[in-house]
Image: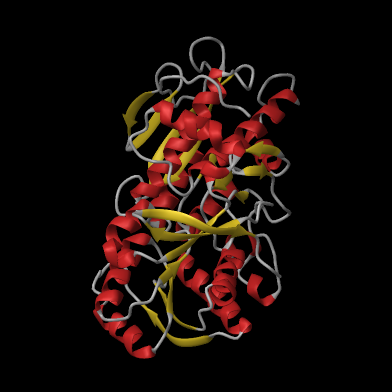
Length: 411
């Protein structure tokens, strides 16, 4: 594993970007003076919601990528290279993500990017980064279309952008995994399906619904909500009158928590189930006592249970981050390390220096990485998807999420 002593980073606020500098001050010029010691500075761009409703997840992503950079520098993992993080806030908005992608492209020292959280934001960034041959590794995007094209569900898989990768598995696996657990293990036979109409939520709900029906389950009703309203009383009433024994929600915790609370208060004492978008400590706060018994699936096995993650967890605590690493911390750490490994491969193949076409070579090298990371083996298939298909079902009980079942989708 690549986790040793830690460096203290200096935060500098420049043009709206939080830049975490490993050695010396931030320098966006095209020289390679780095820390003043003759090293080359390589910047890894980080895009995530650092403010707003989803900032709990976004800050966990940022901190974890920051930790990877600290440890790469402390070990001098790539000889002659000092890494920096340039963190930009997308506020979970596709337009902001696209603007941030352009900022990364403009900074010639950026050789790779980590993020974003939201699939819709990732979709808005892909072409901008791909046109510049700038690699993008998301720790959290789960929409299958990002790697397999818009017709993936029709059996036609075509990779849209060769520079896009992800360390999280997709909703093509996550939705059906939840359906199999609910139907086969929890013995739920009648589900009310709700989504927020976003790329992630609607796609996840769609894959869940298809598998649940395939297994023989009944759809008691379907509904779309506006996650900004936070008043879901009419939907809660429909759920109550539908006779459903479970609710599946495609969306994220800011709406899912209040939705669960309102469904229970409407008299439907049934669990609300969602994907990794609700797997957060914030959901526990928002759903309150009414949310006890609700379920969430999330990518991978529980980080705390993996031998490969023990050092990450310990080092994260030592680093003193104010926010927890949340659902995607390990995946963000591994995403950053995939770029670091790629930079190392490119430098070593070019007599210890970065080539003139470093971005293109790093993007190509990311597709070939293969190492043991925090979340297990880190490698990518021909679409840029992670080869790690592990998933876990969690239940809200005793004031926290507790793992119920881990495994892979049964074909």
